[in-house]
Structure formats: structure tokens, C-alpha cells
Amino acid sequence: MGQMRLHGASVLAILGVLAAQACTASDPVGVDSDILVVRAFLFAGEPVADIRITTTVPLVSEDTLGIPVGDAMVWLVRADVRFDLIATLGVAGAYHYPGSDLVVGSGELFELGISRGSENISAITVVPPPPEGFAVSSDVLDVVDLTSEFGGFGGRGRGAGGLAFGGVIVRWTNPERDLFFVAVDNLDVDPVQIPAPEFIGNARRFVPAPTPTDSTTISQLSLTHLGKHRIRLYRVNQEYADLYEGRVQDSRDLNEPPSNILGGLGVFSAFSSSEGTFMARLTSG
Amino acid sequence: MQFSTRSRRGPGQAFTDLFFSGTGVAKGVELLVHKKAGPLTGWVSYSLSRVEYDLDDFNRGEPFAASHDQTYELKTVGVYQVGPWTFSGTWVYGSGRPFTAPESEYSVELLDGTSFSYIHVGGKNAERLPAYHRMDLGGTRRFESDRFFYELNVSTFNAYGRNNVWYRKFDLSDSAVVVTDVTTHPFTPSIGFRMGIK
Image 1 (spheres, helix red, strand yellow):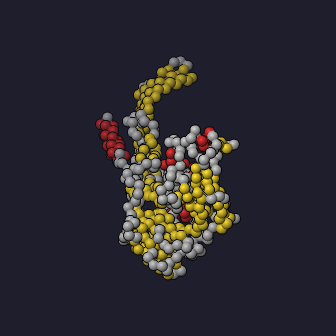
Image 2 (image 1 turned 135 degrees about the horizontal axis):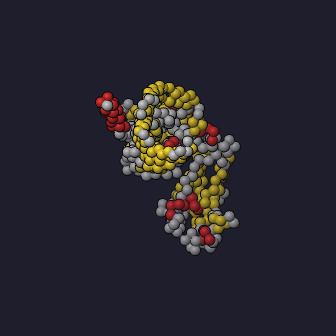
Image 3 (image 1 turned 60 degrees about the vertical axis):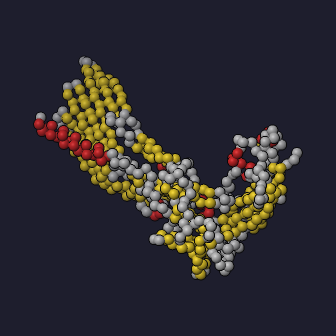
């Protein structure tokens, strides 16, 4: 009987030690290591002026923007010639090349180097060829007033298949199914907002993504303001298109977009573009 | 082979590109002590193991622990029989299983001026969930007649209500990230009745 009590006490002691060990907590998120985030864009035919460096933000922080890094050494190498960049005054974390002897050309390969303390970053990109066959179907986009008796939904804006609005069609040639991106900017100094009911709000802004097609339509649902707009058609590289991936998360298989930045995060990419304009105007009848 | 969106290669890729193949190695030892005689029977087992995958073009080329990898597990089972009564107890303790944790957040401004936010994910299965342990207890009373026997059983699963983490859920839609532990069954009592022919 005494021996049994001894065994029981031993078992309880072992269980107690293991149970105490079992209560060790684990970190809910990984350890933030303050990684440099690079956003470096080169544009064919233009000087180098769009390179930005920030840091990652801890997940426990309410902030979403990283801290700009203005004390890094940044350089580009083209055909074995090194071009040292300098920090841009007044724009935190931005860098540019101050000389006039570096203009980005199509087909050129660039190496990016960044050094900051013990951190060293490198990346490579090639400037794509310019788009070909760029054409815009019209220089005017008629915009419907969506607030007048729900014009766009129940009236003149409705087509046979439901919602349908007029649009400007942008076309280009793309036999190789390369990736293109269309960006639209309003050029007016003080643009007038497109009248729309409150429930639509910001839903009218669609975020386009790089496409391997040869056309796209810009409708009023893509716009927020009336006035003169610039269409820029960019031929983009895969590393830029990768930014649009890894956006949907599953907790059991977290993912992030692939990056061509070695030693850091972000993207180093180059673009060639063509551009045109159109006027968005309110229809009168 | 593993399916993952973690290393997807961009738009237009084939669905099959999300399958990664490579090698996997499982190794370990297991000890078992079994008591079969006397009113108190049962066994204690302990396993120490490691399951590791090494997949091409995945996890930056580094090997990682399999999602079901459990470094060690201790199981104790005891059954005590006194007359028509049978009492049983089970206690399981296992080290935490691996999971992939987000480490930080960053944003990149796109060509049209909009910005996308991303999370930076740590190494595949580089973190470990808290250890798993629970105790199950039960008691059974047996009744017998000339031709039949009856058993009334009362038991509890997870007797001390340990909140064992099944997996960790991350809500990344807001800053800061919201972490929720999805747990397995809490304290669960049950009653059972069984009858049979002798």
C-alpha cells in the first residue's frame, strides 16, 4: 500500500511538471525585424527620380506606413557604370540621380544597390520596350448624372444587359501577351466631382491590374471627377505584376507577393509607356 | 508535395504551379511501458519525432517542419477495475505544432497612385503553437442478468477545460492585426449506455 502511494506521488509530480511546462505561451505573431522596403521605378526616356525606401511596420502597430529611410547609400549600375543617387530634399525616403547623364532607355539592364549599416540590398530589372499600336477610341467620355432619378441605373445609362455606360476604349498590339497597365489621371487643377448618390461613394473607383490583353475600357465607373484626363499605357514587367498577387489571405497558408529585392522587400521595376488624353463631360440630355 | 499560394508566381500562371514538390524526412523514437496485470492496468508512451520537408522553390529554399510535426508526445492511460466499476483516465501532452506567423506589414505605392498593403510572412512553420494537453476521465458501472449485461458510462473529455489551440487565425484587414486562437473541444461531458448478450 505504501509503495502504491509512492508511485502515485511520483506520477503526480511528473504530471505537474509537464503541465506547468505546457502553459508556456507562444508569440501570436512573429518577431518584427525592421526590414527595408524598396519601391524603385524606372521610366523609359526619363531621368531616375522615383526610388523610395521605407521600413516594415510591426503588426502590433496602428500605423500602416513605414518609416522613410533617408540615410541609405543608393546606386544604380548600367553597363558596368555606377550612378550614385542622393536623397531628395523635402521628400522623406526618396532618392534621385542628380546628373543629366542618366536617362533610362528601353532594353537596358539596371542593377540597384542599397547599403545601410549592415543591410545590403540588390535587385535587377530590364526596361521593357515601348507599347505599340496605342490608340484611344474617343477624346470625349460622356458621363451620366447618377443622382437624377438614378439615371445610370434605371434610365438612360442602362443597356440591354443591365448597367452599361459609355466608355473610352484603349487599344494596343500585344501578340506576345505581355503585361500592360493602364493608369488614368485627372489633369484639371480644380476638377469637378462626378455627381453620384451617396451609396455609390468610393465604390466607383476600381483598382485596375496588369493585363495580358490588348485593350481595356475606361468607363465613368473608373472615374471620380469630370475634366481632362491622361491615359498612360505602361508595358510592365512580371515583378510589378507580382505586386497584385498575394493579396488574399488564408490564416493557415499566409502568403505575400514574390519580390525581386534581394535582402529586403518591395519591388525594383522599369516601365515604358505611351499616353493620350480624353475629356470626361456631363451629358446634357 | 504541397499546395500553397505562398510562392505564387504572378498572373496567368497555371493552377498546377501552386503545387510544390520535394523530399520529406520523418524520423523518431517511441517508448512504451504497458502494465497488463492486476486491477490497475494501462500504459505510458513517449514519442520523440521530427518531420521535415524540403521543397524546391519554396520557403526560400530552406527546409521546414511539416504542419503535423510534433516534437514530442506523452500519453498515459490508466484503467482501474473494482468489482462492477471500471474507472479510466487518459492524459495526453504534446509539444506545440508548427505554424506560419506574419511578422510585419508594409505598403507599396502603385503606378496609379494607389497603395497596396502587404504582410511580411515569417518562415514556413517557423513558429510553434502552445503545447497541447488534456485529461479525459470516465467511470463505468456494469450490471448483469442471466442473459444480458448492461453498462452505464459517464465520461468527460478535456476534464480540466484546457483551451488547446487548433490553429491561429489572423485578421489582416485592419491595423493592428487581430490574432484569434481557434481552439479544440472544451470540457465535454457525456453519458452512455450499452447492452449486450452474454
